[in-house]
Amino acid sequence: MDARILVIDDSAALLELLDEILTEDGYRVTTWAQPLPTLEPIKQLAPDLVILDYLLGAQMEGPHLWQQLRADPATAHIPLILCTAAVQEVQSLAAELQQHQVAVVYKPFELEELLATVLDQLAARGARL
Image (tube, rainbow, N blue to C red; front, side, top):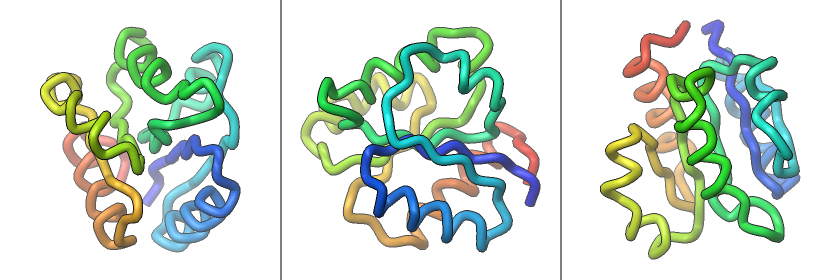
């Protein structure tokens, strides 16, 4: 697999785990542990998929970031998976997330579930597999 995956989460342990698991599956993985002030670093990286913590950072920047990713023509096509323990908050957004083709994996998750969602999202958008 040649797909590049960007994982953005403020948990160092989760970043390390996902980096190891996804790399073992043949993906090229980049991890970030902090919110981004702009989309420029993501645009420069040009990932094939973004896995984003919904409750990212002290200011809960995950919701803002996924909306920015979908609103910007340069990033709107990138498959996106929200990875979150905020079940009620995210379930209340189910229609909006579905409309914008944002997948959700709830924490705690089974690794097989996450890997299947990654594969589904990449295949649905025709990313390099």
